[in-house]
Image (cartoon, rainbow, N blue to C red; front, side, top):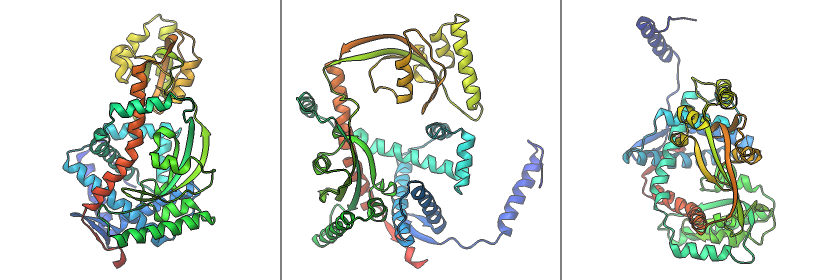
Amino acid sequence: MFRFLPGSRWAACVAALLAVASVWATPRPLDGIVAVVNDEVVTSSELDRRVGLALTQLKRQNIPAPSMDVLRKQVLERLILDRAQIQMAKENGVRVDDISVNSAIARMADVNHMTLAELRTQVERDGLDFNTFREDMRDEITMVRLRDHEVETKIQVSEGEIDNLLAEQGGDTPDATEYDIAQILLGLPEIASPERVDTVHHRAEDLVAQARAGADFAQLAVAYSSAPESLQGGDLGWRTAERLPNVFLEAVKDLKPGEVGPIIRSPVGFHILKLVGRRTAAANKLSNAPVDQTHVRHILLRVTDAMPEAEVRRRLEDLRERVLKGGQDFGQLARLYSVDPSSTRGGDLGWLYPGDTVPEFERVMNALKVKEISEPVKTSFGWHLIQVMDRKTEQASADRNRITARQMLRDRKLDEAMQEWLRQLRDRTYVEYRLDSL
């Protein structure tokens, strides 16, 4: 074991030389090429790493893995689509800086109730180098930003569509149900021959028969679905009726949990849907009934390498004491210390409706008295001090209902638009397969 003094240029040179020497001294097999995507290659080691991650993910979700050949082909398709998106992002000048990557990793740690050190340990325990994990995270953020620019910002919602949704929700029997749905998507290119359509439709019929005969739906999704959530067993999660495409809602609304619906044809292919569960929605977001509102402000700090979680909590506790016992102004402290954009307004978030904030924040906020300040509160955004300024009960405004209805309709259209955009991107991507040659 060599130890070098920090900052020594000589030591750095020696360390670099030793690293290079060790790489060349260790025999390594040649890395084969499994596919060419436009002008870039996908290597065998990249595919093996992603297959390993997929196996770990499936094991955690208790989803049986398909055969290795099937899984490798599915993961390769996902790699090809990811590579095409990264290439397009580069062409469009989409860049993700280190600050964004660090923030995303910190949020991931928070969501999983881990410190950054614990998250790093878990990543390395799964067999992934942490620097590689960081670059994977950068790629994920890059693809999200690209899709936001190429798809989400281009979704149009007309005033007539909003009027129709408001009329539906204002009826006597609005659908206050949430559906947990899983899907298998058998994709088709934009221009498909009748023979190709028939072949894919026959496969869909076979998969429906297998699923209804008791085959594991999640395993079938992993093996055959081309949808983004295929490696999660096709699970779309809980969605209200407003967030489901109309054809999906019609297919599942009369199913019993566990049942598989009929085959659905859409512009991107054939869908097979399974109703996993059904429950009553917590609340109908569109309503003319009186609603509670809370005027709240906060101070937000985030965990970083320079400021670990224990230090974040200590600082927030100190700020709380400075307000309660030192008489300092909460708003002024928010301007000085909060890392939230609301800091310029003294941490003021304005009047919030139920559901406007994440559940952890809202739960604490609702328990506070007017002018009371919370203990430090952890959410996916970081650590907060929360102060309730005032409360009132008013009828939801027509403007707010229209804003909410517009977002519901955008959410409903988003999945369909995303699938269509991904299909078009895949169709125009040059791909040369070399998987069979390995």
